[in-house]
Length: 77
Length: 397
Image (cartoon, rainbow over all chains, first blue to last red; front, side):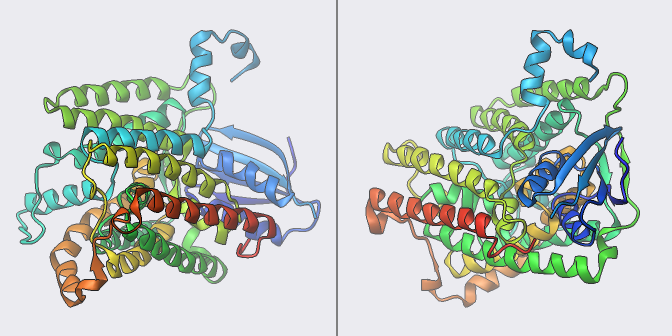
């Protein structure tokens, strides 16, 4: 399991809030740090990998636990 | 799913995975939806969304004993094809979310719920002022070669632009709006067998049974196709808000390209139907050119962006269990009949005739010329979103 430096709770939020918060939080993190994003919107399943792909941040791991989708994203730049 | 279970997957497991293990690309959704809208046009009239919700609202008001003079329902909910379509779309989306194990009652923080309701109110006002929503006025209206559709989209873009500015400002200055207590219920369990796919199957069967209760072939057709539309919408996470919003937000061009693909198919399908006289030439051409279209578009565009779904996006997300979008639907249902009763008549009264025209482009440019105009605008839109995706010129994040 990946060790995260920070957790961003986006449970209950629907599109576009999780991606907006993710973008804002990542800007405030240091290079190489890892963010754990928690979301319940199924839209995050295609959206988070696509966002990482486009912005060049690395999606290290994903998991799903009882309706909560977890994403581990490393800031790269 | 464990590795062991994967090995044992039979032919039906494979079939299930093909459709429900992952979301579909949005352009697949667009193409199928354009085809289904063409089917609806052949049966009676093309896909629309706000008309059904307006009818729900009108019946709600009259059911409560509040009779609205200008806004009486033209029929009961189960007698009006678009009202039935709206019900079955939600049924379809619910069944699809369950089949994909994506259903859960998701209660967003209070600020988000408020934005959902307020966005719904604005959509209810906008779709009545503008004579239609993102589906009837845009996805169908564009294909119907309506000049008002072009103006409505310009209005939408303006509304979306300001709503994105608002959302970014809110996140910076009032982050509490979108954080705080949230709750999720009835989600699929990860371990063991989830009952959701079975429940989804039951909902599909109930939907089909409901469709078969209609003796009228048009109502039956709308119910059946509505169920399919709901499934396709949820599977492809089909969203016009994203198509118009992302250029100003993340820069992602894919949703816009997906919508463009559907519009191209609709253009040719609708035109064939109109030229052959299968459907009326002025179908889905509203008398909204240009003032009602621009004003309605701006209000609707702002509303759908803060709600996070247009009338149809709110419908399928409501089926998926997002309480914020339930409130958006309630907002539309309340605001649309009241706007039709108290606001639109006065608004249209003050407009001179040249500001509220019904313009069918082929009357001015022939069918061929009109199609070329619509395709050219789509081409410019495509070039813009792809260029912006690469340069990020208009994208905030």
